[in-house]
Image (tube, rainbow over all chains, first blue to last red; front, side):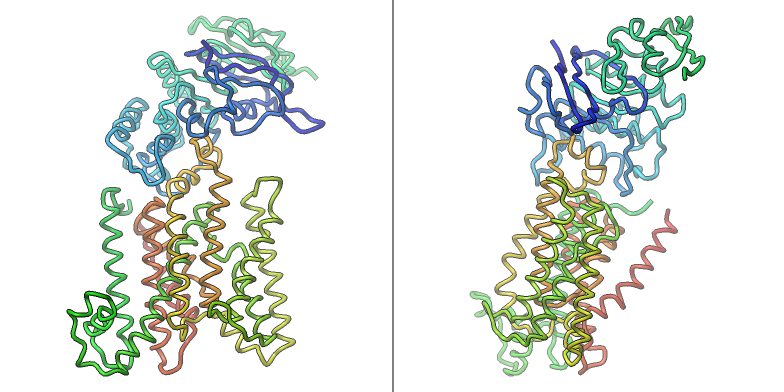
Length: 261
Length: 349
């Protein structure tokens, strides 16, 4: 059974296509990384998968159903989205922000009930932010804020979570922290995880599958060992790289050598 | 950390504000040169209500006193409540929608459009009434709506209306309309003081008519705008986040724009351009009660109403019998108070 099936996806403006006929699928419970150089169309792809942009052409099935057939709120019950950078200037508490994830289940004047609070407490515990719940979102650190935004997505009770570079503004220990959290969700709850990430070594270490994008096309997708090859890296990044198996993590790892002009 | 009101206390806060508003209506109707007690004011009000009128005794008051309260002060105060509440509520929802603390009800050109409309009616010496509304009111209303329609269409790209473009075209159209108005004022200089007075805003001498006609459409708009309170909260975390949480962001913006424009144009057409209330009251409420629109929107409406009738009472009392345009008072007293709150909050952080 597939969480996401994409067929011949095209997106862009007349002369310049950003995505050029992508076809791929993501199985339920898979952990998938999308990698590729800047401007390869990764963010656009993720937003299309969340129905934020409409493609020019192609089909997208979410849990077997055409994406356009979902009502907005119904899609939000299945799929959580963590944008690249969430800046909130208003003094909401951490709990307020996480509670926003319950929106798809609420009518306009409907108050949060005990069940909502229980779910919010659960996801705050899971993401290890419960102790921050009364702090203001404007006062906490970047790493903490990223956890809050992930907790908000979890409060939607989604079976799929899309994340746009969730680790890019974090230092190395918070990067590992966030990825461990996603892995935990993935293994404990069976949540399908699709994330964009720049760090190829981390992608290889955490992912079941990797999709390598360049200029709106999939260079290769599949196991980290099949995707992260010298040939593919050269093609996508114009880079000579040494690829080896890291003896500590036992996963593929890359050492950039030199740029090809 | 600032004091925050727990969600369970929202209805308590609103009840208290409603009671303060009711008391203020009585108090500010009483203050003035008629020598009446606040109890008598409430008695006069109750005496007009079926069933209650048999219980209250106002035989000790003379008809001049009754008439001052009922025919002059009370409608003026109630109009003040409608105007203040509409401007504050619109300001609060526009600030949320634009995600911009500088936004106020006039930011997309309503005030300039209304002022130009009123100016045209004044210099043409138009003198007709529709539904008992003066030609100046009608032209001001149409001018406000026209300005927003122009601004919206200039900013629209296909079906999207980018916030920054909307704000900028609001500023541009606003400046343009103001320039046209200034030009007309120079040409027709003998109407200048009348135009200036209109633009400064006043609640004097409007009687019951605007209240009877306007209160229901305004109250309905207020209720409708509150439907979007939760959506506005979530939109503060970013349009795409909101969209992915199931909110139709573009549609929500259009509804809020429509409702806010309608309320503002309506009250401005009657009262003239009363500044500051729609900008400052939402900020004060946000500082006191937090950013949650479910409390921010209704509390802003109450606070705006209370503040407006307070300012209007000052406007007619401060150098009585001369009346100062209320717009001057709102800025004169609201400004320093707001600066005080800003400073105080800064210290707390």
